[in-house]
Length: 275
DNA sequence: ATAGGGTTAG
Image 1 (cartoon, rainbow, N blue to C red):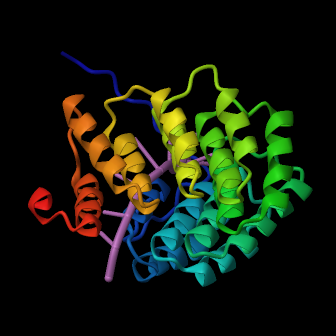
Image 2: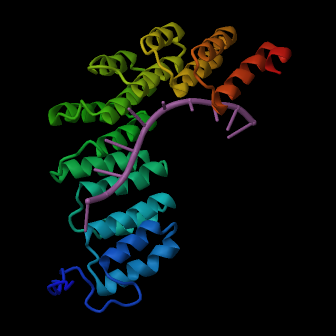
């Protein structure tokens, strides 16, 4: 069988005209995706600056991801400052570097810079920056972002809702957190777990249990969050009772569950039970 | 073509 000869490929403008040892642009991208450190990425980056398009957003995105992996704010800042018109992906990747290194306020500032530049936030960057607000206990910024969420119609996104609840929970605004979960058409187990933890972190045991009784789940993380919270609130017997109930319901404990239950036994001096 | 959620001790 004779196969028709393929028509000669048209070189896309980003293709390296004389591919050296690094190969073409897609191979460079692939190599960057596998880089674990800047040491590995730097020569590839240098090669792109010399021979390729250093403003290629996909390349820059991968470089920022590497900075996230190895917590290098410095390298990331250099890249980001030299990016002429960062899009929402590049803002997200850069803010991720900042937030994962604990530079919450820098992350929040960078987000508001993006808004000033008329770049629309999406349902990926919003949870990220809400997490920063929660960690920094920056309720004012968080509320501002909540307003943007409503205007942009992003409030149905489940990641957005979870991070809104965490923000309000960390700031002690339980009514606002509850409003978010109550507005869900139907609550999912992660949202419920966050709401429960939000109560238990502030000693509101009975509110947490009310929320838990609405769930009915075989999800052991959710059960564990409740058991842990009870232990942290000094409700050892209640925690052990729930542990038994969990097993009766056929939910398998994980290692975190066991740590919590053993801690309860230790605090009760219940050696035999612990054994 | 580029991305993401919840639980623990020390």
